[in-house]
Length: 330
Image 1 (cartoon, rainbow, N blue to C red):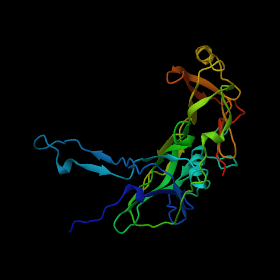
Image 2 (image 1 turned 90 degrees about the vertical axis):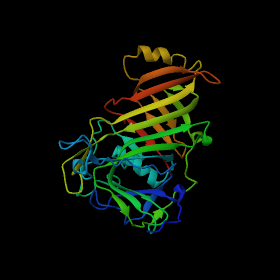
Image 3 (image 1 turned 120 degrees about the vertical axis):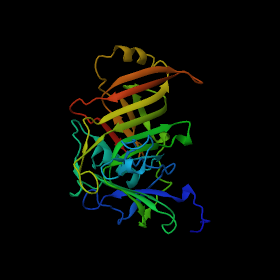
Image 4 (image 1 turned 180 degrees about the vertical axis):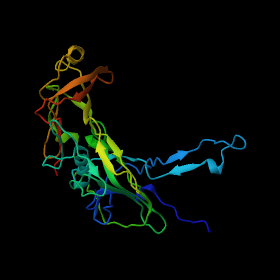
């Protein structure tokens, strides 16, 4: 076999996703896929089950007959990060983790229970079970990595006023209990993202933290919704359910001033959740976040060119208001 002279740039690869086909866990790669704006092509954690222990026998060395590997009953994890766009691709990540496809792009309703999915059964909605592909520039000299039956278990939105003009960024973790195709030669049609649909921090107004008007430097709002896999088939797990809690947290850096000076004492003496405007960025035809009720989980002074406060919150369900509403408007 001759040495190949071909060289490939990581920038030639694309990451795209789409809903699974009619049945969850069946690849949706035959449909037009939607490209995500990712920072890099990170290698997924394949997590095959390996046994590498020395067994009983001659000597104390690891031998071929000692080795065992299974790539069926395992959970594959994919981590992504990049620039957030107000398009269908990036919204699907948000809608999957919230199991919500209403007019707002991500809403965790009060008393949220999540949606369980049986692989092989009809998909619950158009974002309940996702196919993700890491697609090279050609499949003659390269191979695509194809993952189906994916659910989003963590999704974070962040922005920093001093970086990239305050463009919103995202990070996401997806998991699947289905065996992926790591030697795919599929060539799906991929709709690219646009450079005209990127919300920025300057689009927001009416920013409040714990019902105080604040000068915001950075923030990160994170939704965590763990997946639980069970059952068995010849191609992986049979059922994907959701864990015991869907949690929403926010970390923000704000200016220390007369409006925010009480927050350290408020954190130390709190006895119940704040019930109004716990974290708000008002949508200005681009982006918005609303957390009604929250408790402090930390408040600390942060030294820089000026004194700042690092504030951490956890959203609280009051039985009526949504835990969080995220609106990414096209």
